Length: 155
Image (cartoon, rainbow, N blue to C red; front, top):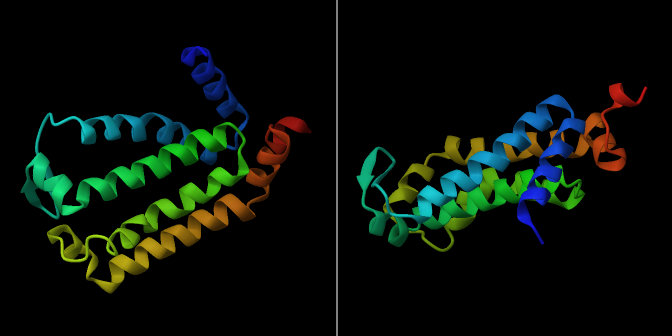
């Protein structure tokens, strides 16, 4: 299968999305793979919690895995929603809270110190809740997933 026509077709699907959902998904479709590429290729050092870290430290500490996981979730969610896959919404809901789950695997890492603050955890959970409300309870989003075109274009 030729990838370019598939990408072009999927990108055209964004034209039928409600404005804010289109903006979010187009950003996810472009930015998530781009940052994931720079995360995977050791071109430069990174900064985590205002501390410069080498490429090796980034991955051994768990920060690289966490960032990569979040980027994969955002990319899957953006591309999936554009392809009108309703289950892709869950990837976007999970993305803000994914770093909290990573603490189960890397609890003693230095990057995890930024998550010690209750407000950081609350902000991640609140963001996931807002994304959930927007993707599951906004009528325009539900209509797009069921019928394709926004309400104002169908009238």
